[in-house]
Length: 345
Image 1 (cartoon, rainbow, N blue to C red):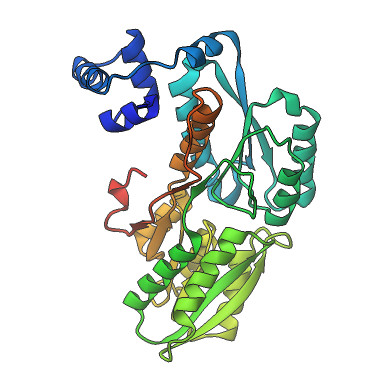
Image 2 (cartoon, one colour):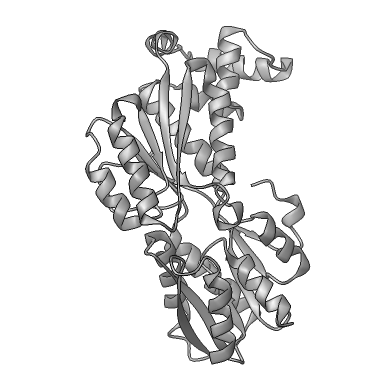
């Protein structure tokens, strides 16, 4: 049976737009209305009457556990934007979200939020979780009720009961970063940063990068630890160590959105032109350095799409009673100073 989500995908519109066409409410352009209605007729789509009736009687509350929006160069504002877009599209189903923000670099803060969820677990119909504190997140999800669906965005942990993971193939994105580095540098010293505390998807980026570089005789790979729990500006301090210990360094791979800290330091030392710099995510500080040439490549993981898809997956599973994909792998977008102004990810 064709689903509401599939109709929306085929028509290249949102789920909310399809719903407005079906029920003839809200503003939809005549062209879009005809396109959607044609698909509904051709595919003999029948609205899920049970789900619609349920939506009129109950408010659904999805909890969102993620780091504070201002952290990591305001990276976490981006998935919030996607979540808000999804809620706006499905608000006719009485769907709400409750944000439970924690300090990414404080295990105490994360545990406090987990206790908050556990103490009011009956209030949630599903959870969207960014499990960036990998080991603590494993313990948290093990203790969740078996009938409470949850999805992971941005990061993943070892878990068999997760409804869906939405994010990048992290190991492959590390391999991609290594390939980009080799396009700019044909030999010499290269550094990467192993970020602490442990975050499995960050570790996999470093592994992918390292595995692609370490066996090539033309390159000498240096791995430096950067512990964010000890210093919020540890990427800057780690860059200082790299320049002191490997003065002829030719490239640095930063497996997080905090690459702007590295770029700031290189600009201060007038080294931004002779060191290739590759990292992640189009936060505003990274955009600035990408446009100036201090950062050579940014790999985007479409965080807004991840937030959007996290809510839509819960919506489809909980309210529409549809099946959802266990993995939704987002594209690896490569951004440079030449194309960043045209990027809509």
